[in-house]
Length: 569
Ligand code: ATP
Ligand code: MG
Ligand code: MG
Ligand code: MG
Image 1: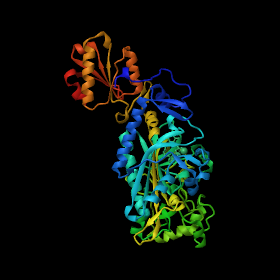
Image 2: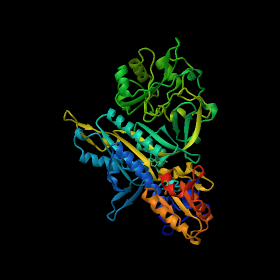
Image 3: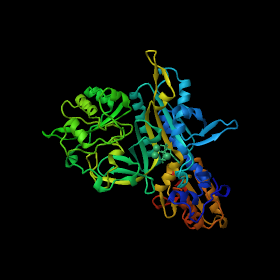
Image 4: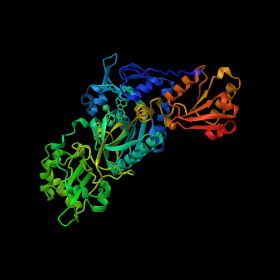
């Protein structure tokens, strides 16, 4: 691309209404322009970055076996009524009526549409499991659109949905998607952390968010300074003051990292039969009287039918979102008072006063007084919940038993959920199972904010001069800057030759062929954040050299004209 034929649209002034650096730089570097609150046009160089992110996401989804389709943005209200979200979603759901007065929503997400499609198209267990995805426009009437494309009202998401006959199968796909997300963020070249999260209005049993670490992030994340422990604190400002936190027990520090088991593994290894719908249990251990590991707290994740549990007199569960008290657990399992670690639950979880449930698990799995479980992902994010750490502040011992808690800020760029049967049950999506009986499907869903990633990457990669793109998503990989080209014969000739040769070598090149002062050209290339600049100037040409500048490191290399292309490639 030649700048003379392009629109660079760079600006010197920092726009006054842009609060965060990525928003300022996206405007100044000519990547986006605002149309109205939360609505942005992608200018050519911004769109190039966007497309590169999109391509990496698509390639990794394809590699993980997901199949691409494309669903409409406009969705009939009936589907949302079927799932119950027409009421539930609130004002973030942008609603419209057609000319006949029929209500529609502009899709903020596509669980309803995909579940409707699958219940029509998939009839047999033989067609499962299947993972379908799209890269498409989402509309959310955000209460506070801000930070440019970071929190927009119209944005692009890659959303994938998986359908299964069994929870074990869902867990396998979830794991595969989790790994695909790690591959995506590795390839994008951003510093990120997967964290245990709450599943919010999407619903479901287990979920992880992927966060790009940045000061401007809207979410707080708790880390251990010594292990892979990481969890999202949805409302950092809701952190309780020190005095109201339960005192951390000394024994907590003596814990090992909990061993990790999925429910399936627990079944196989310990013969535990968790109650129907239980997805995960996490057990904190502390030394008992004999110095062995004893059980002190248990967290159950699942979709129990509360009434059913009540009927079975297993527990008196008043609210599935209440914390289990120390006393409850002490009573349930006879732990030493004061030895409790963090006790909590995730949604829609039951621990609460369900002492009997805990006892039940203990009986099943704690034959020799050792009992701990969690989820084992390849990257070993630990299995702790948001609620475990609400009451945590920096410097506290980490609930995983290793190290101290650090709190950092993050930008949510991806979110994966084990949905279970929330949508398939409400919308009656089932297929014939092997025994010829109709069976409700179990689902997972997996979102990545393609447009938000562009802004998040800038938050991590910038300096006083502008953006410093990771090569994988830079709008151009290399800029050719010929100095005072119009005053020389050989400079344009050599610059043109480099332009042709580098393009032929597969490099994405911007040729700055404007009649501008070198300073103006350098400033623009730095602002736009092109990783390499090839500077062609008279004095170096006298020695048969050109200069290659690295935007990330500031390093300058002198290259021989004859071998420069080879060296760059
Ligand atoms: P947030 O907590 O930031 O509001 P969310 O939890 O509502 O995000 P999800 O429903 O999990 O978002 O959607 C999946 C992904 O879509 C998010 O991880 C994020 O990257 C992206 N996303 C969500 N809302 C927006 C938005 N308003 N603008 C840009 N990207 C968004
Ligand atoms: Mg949101
Ligand atoms: Mg969120
Ligand atoms: Mg989310």
